[in-house]
Image (cartoon, rainbow, N blue to C red; front, top):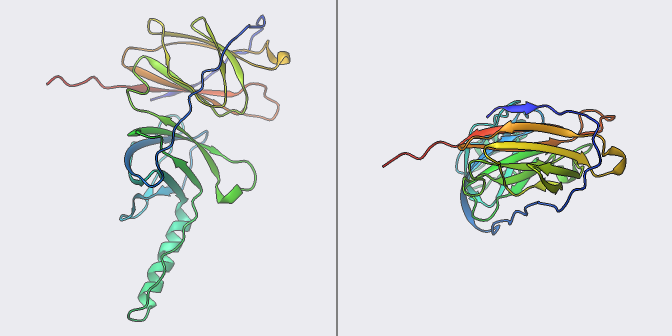
Length: 258
């Protein structure tokens, strides 16, 4: 599941482009118990983040972020709101809780520690496999959250082989022409887009008229068992005019014959 960071800036005649294609994610009932598999990614590898795979039934599990690939697959069972924590804070709180329990008098109830999540997300209704994109929040964390999370239903029926999905986390809106079809890239997760004869020809420009001559352009093959994620991150520098683009590849295994 490699990624490709590349874009071309060229002169282009202004494109006349059309309607948006962004998909809303419906959240599960917050009181429901769910079982889901997930992978994570971020613009830069995150260190020291944990989650509880089965509430407080097991110790926290450490997440592994890669710079160029999706993470390993993780399992979660619990409420539909998935919470993530700072590893050091959790370790300190659990150590203090264990010490308080050891020092408690017989019959004394020691309250469990109250942990502050650094990021939370709601799992879409019916999803059994999701992709989570962590985006650092700038400046002081509001409400203690240090990351926003974009959630994509990553099931093979939601994103079939031979399709790709765009996640626009750049805070820019763009016009796009994909295999000759015009669309608008809004913030968030798009609907799946099918390759044309295993090929994707992609062009995009910012919607502001003064930036119509700046183009992101790429062409790639998308095989019958492959899926892609095209992620738009904020520009790398304060003066850059185009988002940073990352493409993650995913190979869907063939079904085993019975």
